[in-house]
Length: 158
Image (cartoon, rainbow, N blue to C red; front, side):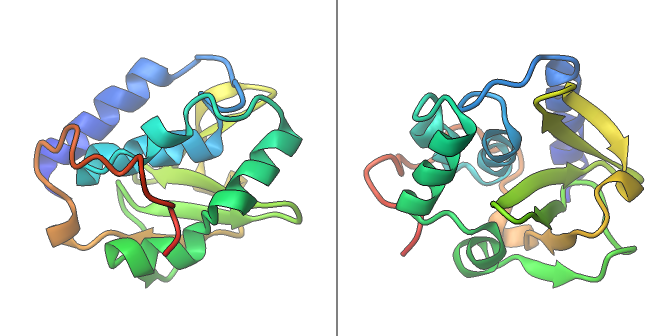
């Protein structure tokens, strides 16, 4: 990850830290999508924002639109799976639960996460274990990427 993107990531995390959890606006998937958009120039978070307001609504929405972090990060963005222990800032950390995949983003020795109980916070990586690590290729990350192409009219999965 380019140093400018890492700075943008850390500034964004700092601006969100301590804010309360809210389904469809500030949950683990919308946080991950916002950071993915920030790094790649995509606009997935805009497509998701406000589309559900409960846990069941989130499960139904992501099942319907086909978001699968473990499949989509490699297929759509060319992300490489990295062995845990070798993650670095900007890597996506995916925790598979019984109900869904929760997305978190690595900040080095810690990660940004968001939970209903504590909102947006920074936690040690050990709190998330076990997790899968995915790293975007350099060519997928646009230095200084902001709003990119309008992807709001397409499904998230192919």
